[in-house]
Length: 214
Length: 214
Image (spheres, rainbow over the protein chains, first blue to last red):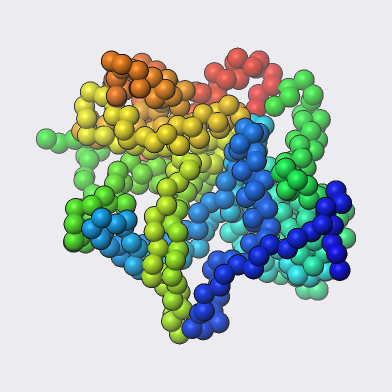
């Protein structure tokens, strides 16, 4: 099946990433959900280069235990462990606003599983939003090739209700379509999510009073 | 000589950090300038817990090359390399503003060497400031036990002039005293730098017009 971009260009899948053989099938810490993150990285590079926004992915936290210092060579870390982050992956500044978000993908076609998120990410976004930040998630339905921006308050609603009986453990697609915004693929940048953030800023400004601007 | 905190409490130096023996005296990637960073970390934890601000240090970027997955154990990174960051170390949100800063220390008593900074940090702060962020450096003169907040625009001035003949390669202390703000040690938080940021926000608001607030 030929898939085209909204602008008519043919979709060419990227080359498969080289994978090293692993002794056991344990949780992989890298390369998961890379497609969406690559597109966000490319968009962020575009925004940075055009001085539209400064938004970066935070490095994965790693606890270093042992370092070697070979002569005439760079220091080599010989023993280290992955640590859990206490924040989301992306943050930065756009139009004077603090921007903070997570990026997640699912193969599901009808809903987005809540297990993709972690408590600390939800809490982090809630705190940032209370302090005046613009916080959201970029969700990709890989099998549908559709990306949505959903403000974190809508995610929190589902998250905080999930322990109650008979409550959904995932967010239905039609809920995301209703309360979120679809982000369409383009050329430069590939995923112009800040165009949606503009809409969020405009509605906030309308509520505050137009003459104050930003 | 007994040194007291401004509130009269006696200064008790922290226990020396355990140091592992290294085969050669190469650049240490950790433990440099830890005193100021520990104080900032403690202050950030205070701000977070009281929901005053959400400000975190970014993890050190590390390029992972080899990971082992032992049975019944956490994944162990066996080969990795330190990467250069393209941003500053600290950022977050306070009173709806994007906050971004670097923390540096010097043993000097009369000036702060510019070689402590890197081009990418200066450029990063300039870009964030242009987009409406509050960007600065927290500078500690260790031998004087004094900490200053200096807005990044003042740092940029010195940085951009340093290639010209007869120009200082360091920022004089009296310049920092004049254009920066001293941050005094306290109890909770240990280094209340956001109290200075309040002053920066107030002067910005005055220039914009009081009725707009934040």
